Image (cartoon, rainbow, N blue to C red; front, side, top):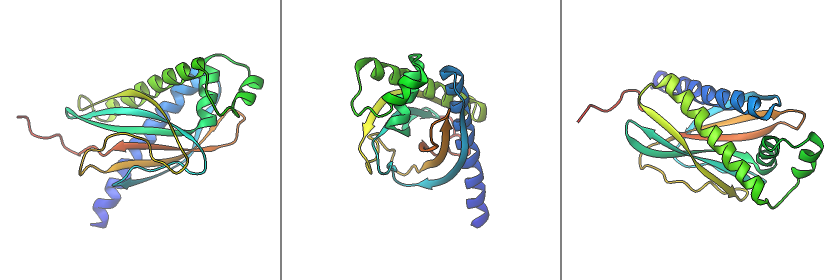
Length: 194
């Protein structure tokens, strides 16, 4: 049993790291700022997880596995989501530093966050296709503000655990932060054709 669990953890870790590496690589190129993954801890969970101590933005994901629609999300603290949006809008470091403290978002920032979400969905789609060709598709399902200690709103498929990756990321000169990636577990073999 321990061997099966360690194999599952290794596969889940590979998937989560590959997805996060692709997101970080694509975002860093788009934002023209260094963004790195410093650490990733992965586990399975029967429940969605919540960000702690602060408001987060959930970049929600539609995940189709073997033709079955499911859902996931990438949660980042509000300040980091604002930073992504501001750099996408080509704001200077000084303006971004000030805007990171915003508690309400203007229309342009919200629109830029939607574009960041589209990039995140496309990046994770590419990562999944590398590992599971022709079995998966991922797309953005928009953004959601999430209160501290609340989980994002997305439907769960009964009986399907989530891969939860707690990643420590660092963007440019800003302090490192925790991002939470939640993705449905992908069965090791596709279901038989009907």
